Each structure stands twice: as C-alpha cells, then as structure tokens.
Length: 483
Image (cartoon, rainbow, N blue to C red; front, top):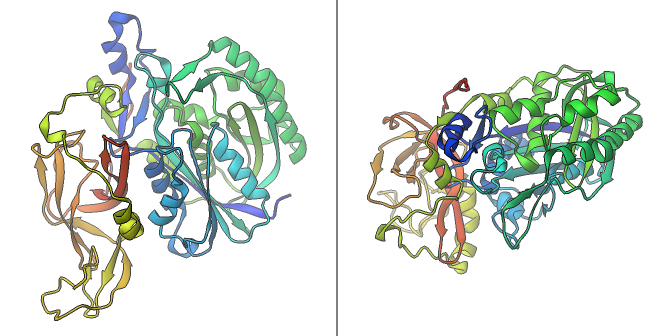
C-alpha cells in the first residue's frame, strides 16, 4: 500500500463544442461525417496542450499547496514544442519555486496515468503535480478529427490523507498499433476497429486489470466506477463481462460530451469519478496506449466542489464547419497583409521578462499602487523617482471590464479581436486581450477570469509566446443537440 494519496483532481475543457451533426450534414456528399451524434471540445486558436494543462492545474492548486510542490510533470502527446520544457513554463505560469523537479513526459496516451502511478508510489517528500493537456491534429473527414477532443486535467499527490488512496496497480507493455502518429507526417493513422477492440481486450485490458485487482484484493463486482478510455466503441463492454465488472464507464460520458481527450482523458475521468463517489467506493483507472497501467483506488473523502462536472456541462455550441476546420489547423486561409506581421520573440527579452509574463507578476510600489508591468519608474502620478516593487501575482485577483472594443482591423486567427482595459480589485488596471467571447460583447463592469493563453504565434519561425487574457467569468451550460 502506498503512503501517498490523491489530494485533488480537476479537469478543464475549452469553451467551444463542435456538434457532430454539423459535420454529418456538411460531409454527406462524401459519405463521411460519422454518426452525427455527440460533440467534441474545440480549443481556441490561442489554446494548446500547455495552456489547457495550466488551467487544469489551477483547479487543484491553491495558494497553500503551491509552496509545497516538490515535483511537476507535464504530460501530452501533442505538446507544441519537442525540445523546450513545457513543464518549466508551467512552473513559471503557476509561480512555483523554480528549483522544483520538473519533467515532461510523452510518447504514449498513458503517460499521465504512468506519471500518476509513479507519484503515488514515490517516496519524494512534498506534493507532486501531474498536469496533462491535448490538442491533437487529424485529417478532416476521418474519425479522429470528429471524435478527438481538446482538454486538460491535473492531479495532486502528496503525503497524508487525501481524497483517494492506491490499493493496487499493474502495468503491461504491448506494442498494439490502434493508432499512431509519425514525426514526419504529424497526422494519425488509425487501424481497423475490430482488430483493435479484440486485441486490446484480450492482450492489454483484461490481463492488466485482472492483475491490478489481484494486487488490490478486490473483485470486479467491488468496483463502483470505472475510468477506462476506449480506443474503439465496445471495448469496455467486451472487457467487463469476463472480469465481472458491473460499474459504469465514465469515459463513455466524456466521449459523448467532449470527445476522446487523449493523455488527459483518464485524469479528467478520475476527476468526474471522485466527484460522483462516496468514501469507501473503489475506482478502476486505466491509462491505455501501447500497453496500459491499471490502478485500483479507494475513495477516502467526499469531493464537494464539482469543478470537473461543471467543465463537462459548460460549453458553447459550434455549428460552423469552416470555423471548426480553421480552429483545428486544417483550413489555411489567406488573411491578407494585416497578418504579415513579423512577431519574432527575442530570446534575451524572453529571458529577462518571461517568468513575470508567464506568471502575470505585477508590482506594488512604495505608495501601495499596483501595476503591470513593473516599469523602471512607477506609473503613479505622485511618484518622484524609481521605487522598489513588491511582487503581486494578478492571475487570481478579481477583475472586471473597464472598457472593451471589438476590432476587425487588427489581425487575429478568429476574429473579431477583443481588447480593452481590465480593472483589478487591488487597483491595477491593465490593457489586455479578452478571449472566449461568443455571442454578446461583455459589458463594462462584467466580471472576468484570467486565462493562460498564447499571446502570439511567430508563423515564420513557428514559435509561440504565452501571456494571460481576460475571459468572461461565467460560461453558459448548453444541452447537447438531439439528432
């Protein structure tokens, strides 16, 4: 039995939900478009695997926990950089101690669950944060483009009592190619479904779950909820019968409402499972991809805040197929001369200001005024010379719209471009971009929540910079369309 326990799990989804009925209607002429049932989460142009992992981590990391973090793991199969530590950027965005142990893991969809298992079995002191995010690309018309959703999830592991403890676990390695993506092409190839289902059930799921249950000393009928990603439909049904599993599979709910979230899927499902459980429930968690990890967990406390369920319920329907193609990177448009901006980021500037930019760190001058950025001389009109600043992190400070403009002259990949003045409760006032605006333009005085986003993409050198943007604090809850 592990001395470590789960202290929290949370899931994040982007605002938009692409209704698959739209694709079925648009692609009917080609005989493509899938069943037309369900929907998938679609990231904004300024979201990627890292930004979504940061948003998920914010759900499990309060100010008290941040100071106790000793290890950070970023998990993804669609990380935007191959040789730049995204875990390091995550450390800056969350303003964690720069000396923490930070690691990126990738290469398989089970990487987040593998990192979680190692954290639960670790003897490292302090809290460990595992944050996963996905924004995978796929060719239009194929199943992955319609069923792979974007999203993030994070888990916090530490000593002492938490919300769940590990009873037993098992791992298996099996190079089963249900789908693969090569570095050369960058888009997935998917294998025949019946072969995948039969092979996955017989050679991966059944043996690893059976071994994990034996290690935990439980039977299939003891499991209250299952979190089992399904590479193809029917996988869980086929594996549950011989193992005596009666529990519903939470990943089925996620797949219908948000799509398959890749490496983030199991942690997102675990967050939902914990929110639906009561102390004493046993949970089955599986990470799948060229093998699998299976964990049996026992719930030890009630999770009262239903943040992951809220993320799954929220969303704004997206019924425009060409906008969906553009947001998923599958429709290169000619944006004209306004898009021909050289947005090169100098390494020296990033080195000098990156941590304060990623962490949204402003400063309080000697007279108590808060500002961002920390200019050499305070902007306060009664200042007479340079003053020392005290760091003030602005990302979680309540804020509201002071002014806002919707502009179609400035280039943005998803117009219009919203920007304006944001008034923070501590007195800071910052000119910022406003994101996640669907429908009515926010009004002056409307509350905002800061979101970690891509500030700009240097398309000539394929580099991206990150900063924070204001977003409407509340999201609407929309029911899925009936087909």
